[in-house]
Image (tube, rainbow, N blue to C red; front, top):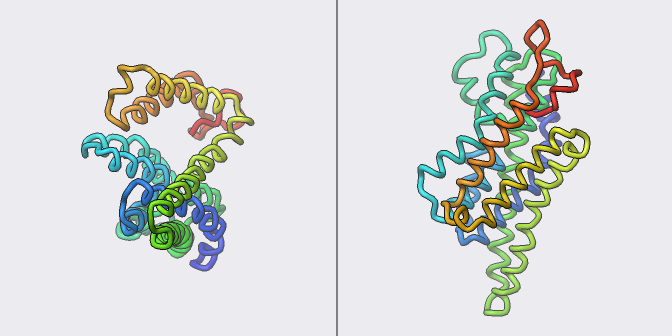
Length: 257
């Protein structure tokens, strides 16, 4: 469980992060932000969904309270992941090491780390999270650089229109990524499919109902997240075995995390 092993385990995650971060940077710049903005966000935040939602809210002029509430709802799952990883840390894991590692807790890093058969060491987690973070930050930098370069090359009214079309096309890849993430588990698990269906219905209600359309941007994300999470937790709670661990073999677990 050394640093090099962590780098190797983090490489596939880094390669998967790069195109997503690339699309995020393109989307941010297409919303009018300077090239340094998505790079700064990716350097100080390590949460794809949170960054996209936060950037959209900032672009829409949302206030700090709404931005904070949205980020809290979207990223609160990392608290549970951190608690889970903490149970597998080697003895005498100091506070400053925990603080460093906490920055790199993502869905993919958590999935790789928690499946390790041995106690997690600081060098291993540092290698795992540093490698994946470099993929995320590198993808953002490439996206920002390409967007800036295209903006300089495509000057004039016609070029600006073409540039806007290219940026919109790149931005679509971000939505494609989210679809690619949710479709496989929705196909294999009826509970995830139900969650997806409820989310779509609620989103459509917020989009088409005139009164709800007037609500500040981001409220729909908070309301949909809370309603869906509470509803699915009540309908399909995790059953626990005698040792207090989730019973993964039960049909009632539903795979909802």
